[in-house]
Length: 209
Image (tube, one colour):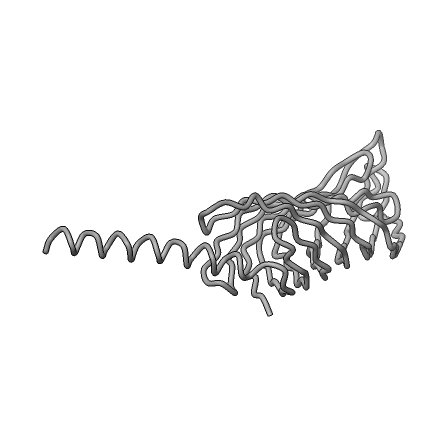
């Protein structure tokens, strides 16, 4: 009786594993949507100085699962940075106040390292059309003149093509739903004379339909 019970348990376990793998395979070659949210760090290279501002980023994607690879189209919000910094060159004192905003539409391709488990590592590449805007207010004064300051305002809005890379891992919770964790790096382009890059870490949910 004990041997029969063990045999039944073994058959049930093997069948469940096969059904799990079968269900996961059945979820390929389907359209899906995905929502991601996470940490986004924007880096601004001004040429003579750099600034990093972090916050919340997010992405909404629609794509197709082709088995070992996927492709997707997305809207990505990389964040908004408001800050100020000051520097001195000789007898000149400069204070900059800026507000920068970055978002994007793009296309990505992913390669999934398929295996017999529900955990799938993946890598991807993204090309995006990035919308960058920057409002800069600069105060220039001479050391020793107190509060005397000459202000200038400059607004730049640029559309740039950028590229990025993504690495992550997904867990197939059900045949139709996967949970993923990923990291990314994106070169967003320049707004005015400022080069903008982004580094992020996201968690998300992908659902077939």
